[in-house]
Length: 254
Image (cartoon, rainbow, N blue to C red; front, side, top):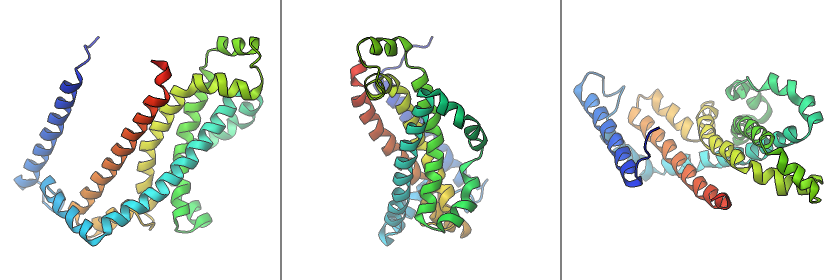
């Protein structure tokens, strides 16, 4: 079993890895082996950011994507947790929807794009729908597994102490016991939601994905990379903030 690294050592090695990666990328871009139009150097990205920021395009695209990302994330997370918890707790409901889930789950979110356009038009609601669909399934299965994994002895103990009713059992026993697994699903949904943002915006909805598509059509690959980095940075911020909340919520476990 490997020995855990100290925090400062881990941070230092991670920074070193990023530095080596960027230097190798810069060297490859400057070597001429790959045309600069196909692979921009990292040093070309800051200039692209300044130009996009000064024009206001970067801010507008970020705000547009954040709008339907957060809406889809909230909707998909809530419904996924609710349906997954319900299926795990009630056998009748689990059996009634089991085959429907098996039929729908393998269908990727992007396959629903034609229906999203038909139902909602080329609008922010269509992007919200696709993002919510992606996040829903992640949270559904995470919540289902987490609730089913709650120690049955705790539930029996709850009955013994008069907590066998639906509401007390759900909020005093099941959800606290399943919370770590549920939050793991929420965290996974944060990243998958951003992946769906790009796919959802490729059919004309304003945002980071549409800007990347427009730039790639003009071979402005430095702008494409800029928005790829932007998505990574936004996900990093979301993940960091969520981890802070998660640590506080699960502080009772320590």
